[in-house]
Length: 65
Image 1 (cartoon, rainbow, N blue to C red):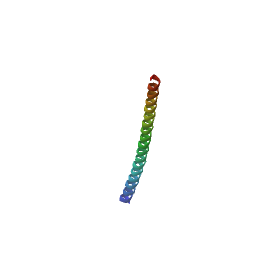
Image 2 (cartoon, one colour):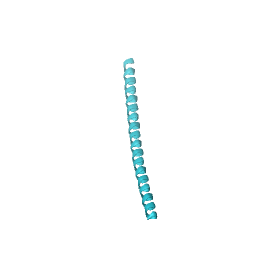
Image 3 (cartoon, rainbow, N blue to C red):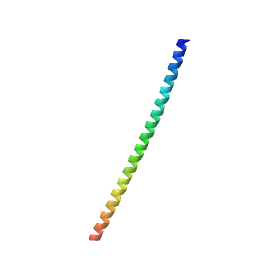
Image 4 (tube, one colour):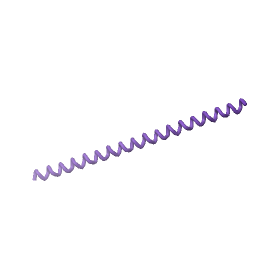
């Protein structure tokens, strides 16, 4: 029975390790998605800022003429 118990313990430990790996991988993917969303929001905000800046410069030039 010692061999069977050892095999069972090893299988349980492997299953636990695989489960932890799956949880870690899921968390990493989620973190990466959050990071990509944040980067997209930053790019959008920068584009909006540049658009407003260009509009304001154009309007200022119109006022000067």
